[in-house]
Length: 399
Image (cartoon, rainbow, N blue to C red; front, side, top):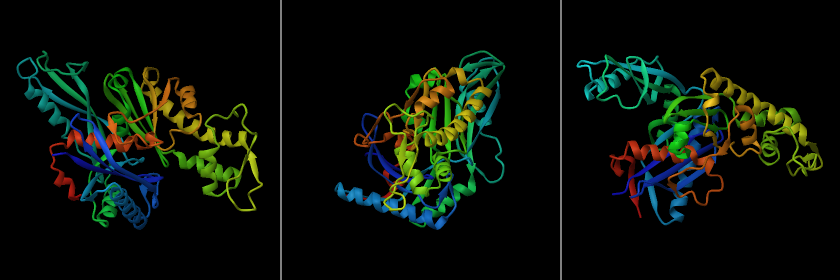
């Protein structure tokens, strides 16, 4: 029997729903996905529950239309929630076990792992995931598998990801109103990393940067493990707001200028016009133009602020010069004109746009980097929940 799962992302800019199916070769096929503009969400936090309820209802109906067009109908019972935002936090964890007979056995490894999970969270926080990073034995680190090794004290290191429980409950409440149960929350940038990284990238050193509307997520990998991850409270909407303020435009005009005309670099490309026509059909704006260089300067200032914050975080952890596999950009803002060049200038590493790997069904998607988190979430769910029956996730499937 095939395994179907659904994931829901309530982003600042878009609400996305996708359904994936496990293939016999282990790959995930996205059998349907749809994206609608979000309302009621700011900086990845719900600020208007009623509007979010409508967004979820709209994306469910849009998904049904796509399914009917393809000749099938899937009635969703529940979906996994993809989380982002500054309320999602990471912190290091350490679990310890004493070696009873000089050599590490499965019992000590299990004890260390259980110790790892015996921590206490502050009130109002909910665990999203725990990512093991490796072991050390009597202070000697970098051990992948300590079984059979000699020593006295075994430690396992991990990265804890937790989030504001109220924010998760708000999302669940909104989905409940549309008869959709939200299952375990998943961290957006970690999902995206699952989708776009080769194993070599994880070993050689890489950073995945999730360019969202309200925030920017990042995750750094080295020696095959995630070493740090987090969220910066600056995203694409901040650039839109800067453009609107600087040039006295509407938000929709500023968004169009950002997407269609702006560059992450302050210079003007050779051959480009010196001035940009203001978007809109109104006679009041159809003849108005603004300086392209000024537009690029405003855009560059905000992006450079964001990347400088990221650079300082990496530098503090002595990771900046260890990203030999480079930076991988995903999310809605990844294709900002000249953004890879600016990332390379700021972080000093090669940069590319991330495309989901080992996933089918996105062949006709013009911007697959937008769906990296969704694709990775489906991969994660299939890998970690594959023992679940299809009926655990769906109330009914009708052909």
